[in-house]
Image (tube, rainbow over all chains, first blue to last red; front, side, top):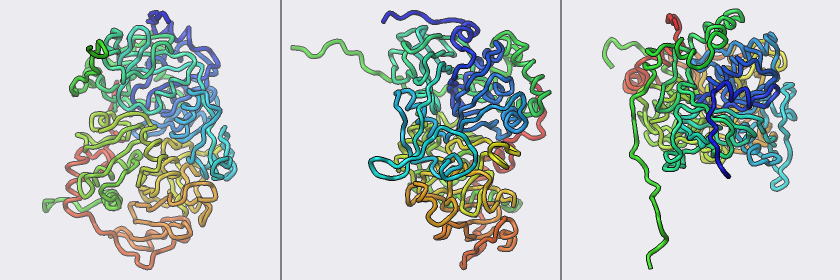
Length: 318
Length: 271
């Protein structure tokens, strides 16, 4: 298949590939969170999205507060300090800005749902979530979900059947990608691999764009092959305030700031006006943070020995 | 410890009591908050050969230079022998039956060791909404022994939780196995700032030991049901000098957990 370069700006990528009403997967398990992309989605006023994100965190919280989410698929939402995710709580308890529907799974069950989605399996059976409040045959919690509880045809034991979750579009922030979308990530990968593979369209946001040759010298690190990717955006610091292994630390104080600046709806709107609506793009956001703050987040370099996959040229000598 | 060292706080007693339950050589699934510091304390003292598995896909193998705020703290990255996908820990280790123990924090725990971290009040119209499961439900469903570590407060110990985020012994007796959960799994102990609890044959929490400065009556008053008490109930062994020094000066010198510094209260932040 002839490959073409897919480099474009964040605004173009979001405009072209994220549609109102989409089921949207946002990758990142605390690390590699696509904050820059989420802010652009909010700025473009996308609506009625289903957000699918295993680790909720403040990114999901902001999107809920901004009103772009209708339905949420997740395993948890919190501010990692730990502190309350205020927009999520306001939505569920006070219908502000509206009440989102929440479809919850345990973290393993959600990983299995993504796995089933990526392989196009009809369902996958597991021994987790049995007896929990989400086990509707055991409880009357009123929690709505798409789980089923059946006897295994093989062993007769009771199992939880997890449906496949597929996404219209998926976005992740990674360390590096070539211009074709061969994207490489390292750090704590969580659900990223199968979450991304269960998406029809994929947008890769990368700290750095590198030559394909760099990717090919260490292909174990590739999260998704370029032929599955639709857009590649070069977006340094795109995961801030969350971390990117080897590039920047978590901006811990920002989470306390976020918690304080969003504990009422009015404050949240002020926060968004400053950090999202009031800037044109990620560069504007980074200017607000200032170079000094960003430099303070850079870790010391800590490298392993380079690995060699071996360069081979022929089978044997006769 | 020097002469002027302060006596152990209830939180320090809780962390030390929980760490002592960890056997060297065991494979642990470690959840966020208290389990992080409990497992690190055990690893630096009597259990250097434990495997600390985290839900994001990490096997932590070293005491990091800074104590992780939570299990996704990027300091974990360069202190691991394996860093991969959630399937590598929650999947093949925990679901695959290779873990010995799961360590969890909780918002509330009930008489049968069920944990709630989802909501206060009714699920469909909650008074307060909490974070949700993350990997907690998986730990509680699948781990052979779950240790629950929680700061004691009467509100946190209802007879029945509002929502079962993480299954314990459900409604007691054989209800856990009837739900289909594997035999030989479930809560093993609850460790709090007031005491240490185990579970009897009925799957009901029973007080095994109490904090040295508290009494059995104090503990009974701080749960919302008629608490069973083990015949051999006794005060908890206070932290040794070595345990306390390791905890305070090696693992958490910044007081992130011991003094709640990670909540960043009272710090002026202008960005």
